[in-house]
Every structure is written in C-alpha cells, then in structure tokens.
Image (cartoon, rainbow, N blue to C red; front, side):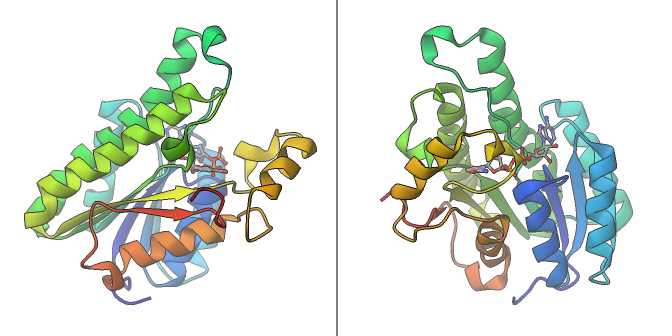
Length: 247
Ligand code: NAD
C-alpha cells in the first residue's frame, strides 16, 4: 500500500480483535506501530507479532477515556518517534441492555470510551499533526451508529457521535493536510461479538448479502486504504465495511 513505509501509527484498542488486525496490517506495509490498550500483557503480544515485519513498535498501557492518559500516550509516541502520522481510534466497548433498564454507569462507560476517548486522542494528536502539516486520522465507528439498534442505545449514540466528530474535525483540519475519516464495520468476529448466541449470529448472517461474518482483516484493509496515499483526497467520509448488511 502506497505511502505507509516508515510512517508512525498509533492504534488504540490494539491488544486484540480489530485493533490487533489493524496493527499487523499497517506493520506489514512498513509502518511503525504504537499500540495502546488497557491490557498490557496482550499489548506486548501484539508488539511481538508486529516486530516480525521488521518495523519498530511501542506498547503503551492507556485508558483513552482519561484525557491525561491519552496525552501521555501521544507524548510517549512523539518521544520515541518524534512524530505521529496516523491515528486509528479503535478502542471501544459495549454495555448492552434495553433503554428502560440502562443504568447511568452503562451509558457513561460507553460514551466515555467510544466517543470521549476518540476526542481525547484526536485532541492530543492534533497539535503534532498541525505542526507537521500532515496527518491521517481514522475513527472506528459502526453500522449501528448509522442504523441504530434495539438494546444498544448507548453504543449507537456513541458511534453516531464518532461520525459527527469525524466530519467536524475533517472540516477543521483540512487546511493542514490532515484527513479525518471513519470506518463503520458490520458484524465482525472478535471477542466483542463472541458472547452472542448462535441464533443471533444466524439472524445477522441472513441479512448479509455476502453471506459471511466479517473478519478483523476486512476492517484493517479499509484502514490501510484510508491511511495510505491512495486516499489523499478523501476526508470526512464514512466507509461502511459490512458485507452489504446496511444499505
Ligand atoms: P474487542 O473487545 O475485541 O477489543 C476492544 C479493544 O479496545 C481491546 O484492545 C481493549 O483493550 C480496548 N479498550 C477497551 N476499553 C479501552 C479503554 N478505555 N482504553 C483503551 N483501550 C480500551 O473489540 P473489537 O470487536 O475488536 O472492536 C474494535 C472496535 O470496532 C470497537 O470500537 C468496536 O466498537 C468497533 N466495532 C466492532 C464490531 C464487531 O462486530 N466486532 C462492529 C462494529 C464496530
């Protein structure tokens, strides 16, 4: 993929699932990786696998919902690599339940990680990217942020918020050669979706024209494109990667 060699990429939620797939894909195309998540042990594993591609990596334990920790993450990346080219805001959680039963802490937890965490990392990165006059920010939303979903009011609102945040930042940063785009995955097989029943998975499958559930690498491929120079003239967009589920 064009334009990724020797770039510095920060990926949040990099300890497993989609985030780990994104790290490996970017590393395979020559980017150095700063992997962030709350689980330090698994992060080290991501970095070990990244190293196999001959690039450098750094693991940073970080709770993105805390602005001070997001600041420290970006500082650590800049201290090691002197710059930040690519930021992938992938860290995300679910706390599903129907709206009347949803507790305030379930609402707050999802908003704080998915939406505020994305804001925290973008804000911390922005001054470096503005100084460099270069940046590629990719925010992982969800098709649920477009369609809504019963039992996921908090998650849907947070992911719709990520799309609005993406578009606003794209308008603010365009003049500095910083693009901001979003990827909206459909149903991807990871630990996040592992708890769903077979019945639920089959119902999902019936709605997917391409007749398979997604994999981490399906999302990583979209991120690769948006981070590469092939997408230099794209900003403020939402790339839906869902096998055709929501259209
Ligand atoms: P996952 O649960 O397997 O991984 C989530 C990652 O986020 C982990 O590395 C975890 O450590 C990290 N994380 C959680 N809270 C954090 C915090 N406060 N600070 C830093 N890191 C934190 O999930 P996944 O399925 O790989 O999902 C990755 C992203 O893709 C999420 O934003 C999710 O909402 C989105 N997404 C997933 C699907 C799907 O079907 N799996 C669909 C649409 C969107």
